[in-house]
Length: 307
Image (cartoon, rainbow, N blue to C red; front, side, top):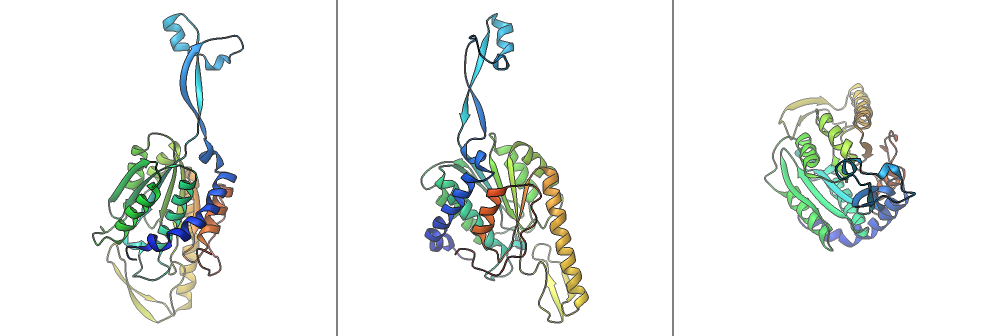
């Protein structure tokens, strides 16, 4: 991927994001985008008919007078994106690499949140936390965030490994008010459950797993040498052997199912986003339903991501 991806597709992505913004407002996530709670506003003396549950008992004990707490509805959505740009997200420049799908999804969600006048923030990671942009609001905030994401994604200084756990931990410490946290990654890493659980207890966490064309099957081309882009471990794989291909597909399906169960156990909303799936359609359906345990949307017909 090269610099200019978002600039070339900005208008197209922003138009497609209108549909997604409508889905966010109309669907099961609408409470997150219209105000999901109340915040303390002020105190006043108790009046007949007030709810006794709103009495400030501590203040009453100190002052001898009865006061009630007043609240105001919390209206602002806070959207925080956590985006994986590690080496496993890039398969050597193919058109349908997971990294490009992740950036497309990030752009759609960002523009949709911008249509809803939301606060937005970003954390980008590879083998370490590469970039953090705190929550902010403004006319050009979405473009600013996406430009920072694009620069980080094409940087030649990518650190090996996948720092998913540190990224989740950093987000939990950074976000002081409840937010909708969207994690875009291939989740090809272990031992992130604790950090995801902590984050999901305080925020609404959507875990979006990006698949790659080689996750389920490989071209039948004999015995080939493959190198893990993050660990540099090499293996010879018998791609023409039918039993090998079937076992690979079985393990891929099991991995997805196990990952979904892990996310649900941690309190996060899991979604599988296939490399060749219609991003707008899948994200819109996700924000409309938002249910735990939704079956993986794993096999979509080959189609352009943005109609």
